[in-house]
Length: 324
Image: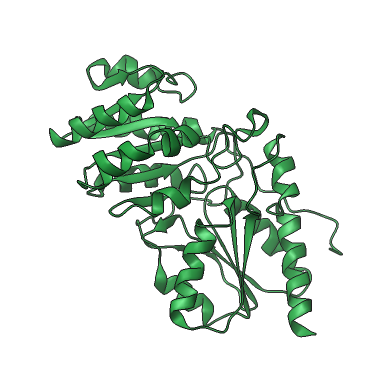
């Protein structure tokens, strides 16, 4: 890019994990149906305050994620609203069969509290990176998939998941992430938020990559490109109307996600665009069907083209190719 100054968004005071656990703790003060069942990650997930305040509603099963899902399913059949809390990679894959058969199939009111989403586990490597989880979860009938973007949106996602009748996969990051919203946003499961208007391209993101899209949009503006930014915080049920509006308003669509480009947000948007029969091209940005490298998250975002500057570069290159 010809732009050298990269806009900076403010960092949150809390990590994504802290914001999510605090929101659940606050909700549990008035909602006595809320339980937490975790698999020996109480401290990593900042659940100690919950365990101390509500010991009768907190269960640590040890390193036994499949057992954790069986317990949450049982609690849900008793009218409780249990949260199964673990790292995204382990929660989505080690307990995949239990989620499908014990929770999603009977449509039980279990909430999956998945942290360290995407490549936020950084130097822990691909065994701890969750780059298939969205694809796995959205393929299950009855399952809602929600990926909030920042510390303002995370508490809203928690509240919305509690109110939603049925299983919800909530995916959070790990670190102090950039703040996208300046105040509490309106949040409804299945309804995207328009973060920025634009007429040339649409950048559609979920979770941590939304901040990178905002940075990219600001950089593109200096290059004369108007970028719409959509917060597709709910990957399932996806907001088809928001995608339809974007298709009718811009020249090209880009999805940006901290996930394999197959089966995640990009796949979900592509399915809607295909059903619309639209001629508007779509480019999916994310991990190109590989296992992620080991490194700091910021380094990996840049490596895989989902940092703000790399997104902006790709948009400019794609528009130039299209205009030849």
